Length: 427
View 1: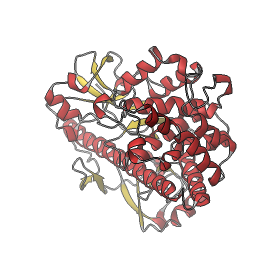
View 2 (view 1 turned 120 degrees about the vertical axis):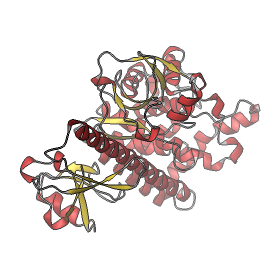
View 3 (view 1 turned 135 degrees about the vertical axis):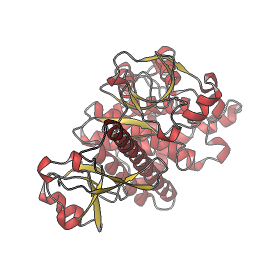
């Protein structure tokens, strides 16, 4: 439960929430426990007048005993008042208030994640807008955006991959952001060194930068391309290298751009190189780029569910990818990646919302329950339900109409990341 506090009253041990843009502060996460006076000084320098903190997640000696009034974000996305639990509160009242708290925290976490994703896409669009006229500035901005993402990824705790609502912004920035986020999370899981992570992130953000030289019709691949149109489309890789060199990108980032359509079995383009000649960063981005293109096809009706995309890559296209990286990718995303529509072992329908790579078979899901309004549904933690699992993956059209309205499967899939601390219901 979140309570406001004056900045002069901040203490080491408080668990605080920074309600500012994710690039407006230097901390890896926007919610964390203060561990040093230096952090307090940094927070005071952000220009905030008050700050929210969670007594229940702070050191015990800091929690005030008198009853306080708390402001939580309710399911209708407005602030609602809630008082701290009374000593004479009945079990039913305590359960109701606890559920309200969990729902408010879940809603707040999702809103924060979507806001951060939107801000990151906005910054990426600014990079792309500057590529032609101000290439060096575009490079510097791409480096800053990559470092900001990495700073918030390089934390000790587990990060979860989260599916968002309809992506904020145009398809190009959303696609590049998806590829960059998942590629960097995978690089983090593989313990790449900082320099390689930076090259990976910059290359992933800019892997399609060569498309700025193409007419709009040729920026997305289509089945009805003529031979000449397909050739022109594939030249976006060469155009990207030209732009990358103008920007002064590092050799590692340039390799990602040059090889993001190559395959391990030499069936890719433009050079048809084999696995041993592909840079590790390029192997990662080529794989993640293919995954996102399957999930977010130019023609939405041709898009696969995340589970279907991963299954096709493993069962039919395995020779295209580095086997070690593909296995690591599946561990990161889970057998049922976020956004997958599934049927549980008790026959209920659900959508996978978040996956923690340490527990890929036990994601958190949003369950279709007609007795609970969709805006009040808590994510179900399958890890806490040993007798409950996922029976199968489904296409949206296999769901009953009421389940489709309730779960609202995404027409376009967007991913971001966050700490694995979102409350989830147990059954």
